[in-house]
Length: 345
Ligand code: PEP
Ligand code: MN
Image (cartoon, rainbow, N blue to C red):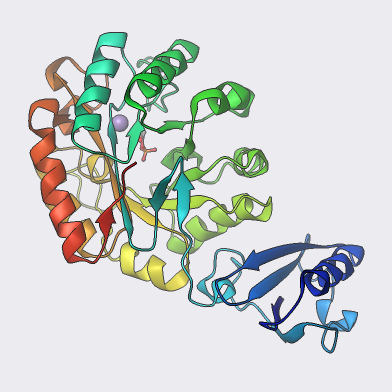
């Protein structure tokens, strides 16, 4: 249930409603909009708490009670009354009119490769630096990432370039270490439905880039986001990264461009697109990035390498560091055409 407060409601009125909801055993999620406050009242278990029976209607400051129609309650567009979530990552905004260009290596391989890539993307004016220290690999015999040493190298790249860092967390036991360096935690496609992981990341309060599972529907993606939001963490970005279809001869997966406008209709959360993992081919990354920006995405995340031929992971899709600045300008121009400004410090 959604309790819509009057524009004139005082802080005391809001507090009194929250107390009543919590006393009844439900969770209150106050969401302050530009105009008015809405309080989402969510029972911990469905149908457990009957909010309608609490007599909130008629209480000071309360305008009306509105049922939330979607199963993803906190992620739904309805709860924000048309306002969009704008994340603030160390002063860099993502969402609304702000477009995020996120770039960096697939994997942190060495100090030299990490620093060279970080400087290259910083010089091109990106919003965030990406890089994996813990890698989800299909084969258990493939390189699994540098782990703690990778996190230290990311911290070094962040200190030198000033770029906020997004890095993947796969195992909840590594959460404290990842939080030391991550400004945004990435949940990879394979972990989209790892619910204990989502819950712990939700509790940490750290902003999240939640990638769509390889065969996940949009409703499943939104329900996964709900696990994080429910813990009181409002800073979630969704990421379309390609889904499995029958076509496997010429590309890794199929980038679901339609997901962008559909998600924007269903949710207030920012929508990021990962053309690198969708395509698995460098030559497709520019056209797909432009398509994503033109379709209204709130940002893209791409992989870059100084020498992709020797990359330990995902070399064929890595953009060349040498020409990355041109790529970045082309994406920026398209984002501007779609009404968004590139977000930087
Ligand atoms: C990645 O971003 O490095 C990655 C492995 O992506 P995904 O989880 O989308 O496959
Ligand atoms: Mn990769």
